[in-house]
Length: 616
Image (cartoon, rainbow, N blue to C red):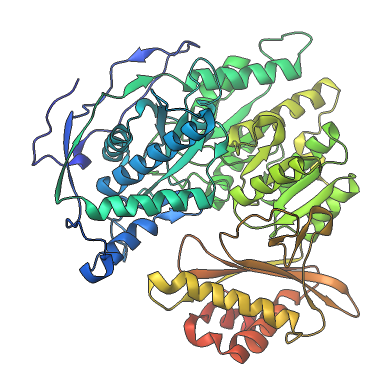
């Protein structure tokens, strides 16, 4: 149904979709479930036809759009409710970004095919956030302005959006997932996909730059015509069947092929995000007992805890449910299911380094000698765990897109890399389109769990990492940048590059040295590619290894520019008592104060830790 939206109507009053998909592998075309107007009135900025934006004071308005870029995503505040933060991810902003993405997709297809293209098809999925309804309208409007055909997947997951470009009969040219992952209900964002995978930071930056020009050049009231009403399609049931088929085929259960999870109890904690489908449309249909599962109903206010496998509450309540029900496995998904964590049968949480080790153990059985790519915040013990199993460990830049792209590059250069994983829980496999898919990671773990049982083992998946040592000390600290938001990025880069120079010049002592991963062509503190085609640096960061004559290498420190907020994150780990305290004292006295960088920072947290060894 379509109608003219009255000028007084607020887009925030449009009711979000409640999708309950029946099982089917056929892409049914459905009536759009909430009212999409054929004509919208979106409030935008002052009009301008002049190119000198600085003189008109519009450079700051353009900057607001550009600052919505968050690495390879777009993120912002979509709903009022955050102290000190204004709503910046508005319908007009989102519409401009969606239009620029549509144009970018069309331009790429023209270049690929060598001719004009028609009927460019783009799908949209979203998590249950309360801003999803109004922003969906803006996205469909922007894509329509670009000349794209639009398809609404409704409540979906990030991996499913990508898979909608790969699985027949859908095979969309591109897809957008609207989510802000584990961030509060007030936030929202966009992730972009084509058949080649997720967009890079540079590509998203280009799209946001073009969107900024659109945004400031539009008149105060923009009449945005929806050329066609978006077509709603069922895809999640097809994606779920895809996952079920993988489990059935790879387990190949000798007694009950179609129900290989019969006899297993598996608890899912979806955190009121998009992950509930995995319980009723994957596990239940494969014969698993899912009694005791938590927070399966989508709720964009996330009333119980944030859907996040790194969240201590999420892991604690899942652990309790596993132990109470004597379950075989617990699963924790983030909001959009591109990350996951698990709890073993004994109630041991498996996330961070432990999850990487578990996946590395599985992958190295299947692909001996494979390189495992991770971000550079992993422990020395994880490197030992991987190399003890005849794997190679490549430490690389923080950021899931960076880690995945490094794996792609290594394979293209002839280095076998089957697993790319970040400590946050983002994990991608070569066999699965290099897609960071939390559900697929869990599928791999479930398959291994069933195989172990069929081979006569009752130990459970936790036994695969029983020899992984934990660092004796691990600390994360933050320093806030005091300059204006628009200057924060440049200020952070200057501080981090000065840190690198101090290490190279030996100012922090003989035991401080930039880390490297020579076998994988990564140098300069696990940041710089030393191959023939280095990837552009989207955020500056360096890892330094720290040694002493008596202990050898006992720890490392990693300093990085945040792409979310105007601050710098510092991670440290040590294998000896007092190692992190010692590194913090050197960092404070011989770098921050000695360089004068302390004047541009609120470094109270690191100063407190360097004094007392305590951050609480």
